[in-house]
Image (cartoon, rainbow, N blue to C red; front, side, top):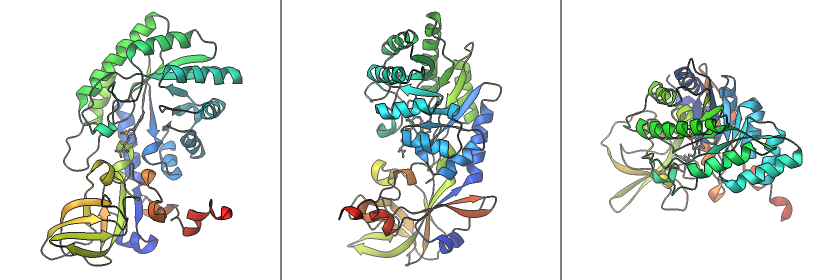
Length: 402
Ligand code: LLP
């Protein structure tokens, strides 16, 4: 689909996040159909893009939600996700969050430590309920991705070792207030290799078998998220192959395969539209200063992540290398480094690609910059799905204390 970015910029202003809802649906359907013939649950990882309308777009397709705070759980429910399709993950949950999650009757709480298990049990006991849980197992597999988004090694803070997981399952089985229905692993994000996923899935499937032998009956085999997407020239995993390695791993087990994709569903549906303010040179170094900044899209600054940037309307002229930077007072505030561009002028529009995942959700108000407007494109029409924040919004929670 071709998006008229010029029209969108004049209608809604810049910087602007633009999401192609039809593309998101196509991605959802491709993944869901890869598991066809098997019991499966796609629970969208809300952290990737938690705009209510984005979540609702998936909920209408039948998606569940993978959440990492009670705020995300409530967002998912507000957007129409059925509670019995919601998974509450994360390495630390407060007792209040656990209590609310139990009261909301979500599918399961994903537990990541022995202490957390005891907390869930105590809260469930207080409420007089049985908490459905899964345990996140750390299979000690190297996902071969960026160290900040690799999570399946013992050196990472996530999950528990296999021996510990077994002890926790036995404990849970014998508890009146715990119902261990699931097992979970997530070895990392932006995965482009199948082997580590297959290796982890096989390790976890073996564990499910050994749990069966001691009467712990796992019903949900949760493979986490992590499917990589194209930012530049990555060779990607085909979702059919992805599904197949999981299906092979669980052969003979009567489980529902749950998965929690975030980036795969949203990254390449999203664009950050920004306007050139002006250019400058420090010595021979060229900078293009734009109206979007690291507070709008943090990934380049935080992970040196690459996002393709293009001119909305191609321009004539000799190209030279420039850094595309924002107005924030940090040398680390850049959207791209050393990209080839013709001479740019104030008002030229640039579009930053692959910005639909971990873009707006990681945005902040640093430098008292309001978070930008978000717009959805669906069936060829655009609509606002979140208003641009105003100065009044930014000071609303402080000004009464002045
Ligand atoms: N499930 C669990 C337990 C997770 O920790 C994550 C991501 C997902 C699912 C979704 O992963 P995805 O399918 O989106 O790869 N801010 C980083 C990504 C952090 C991912 C954290 N966990 C980035 O911008 O690349």
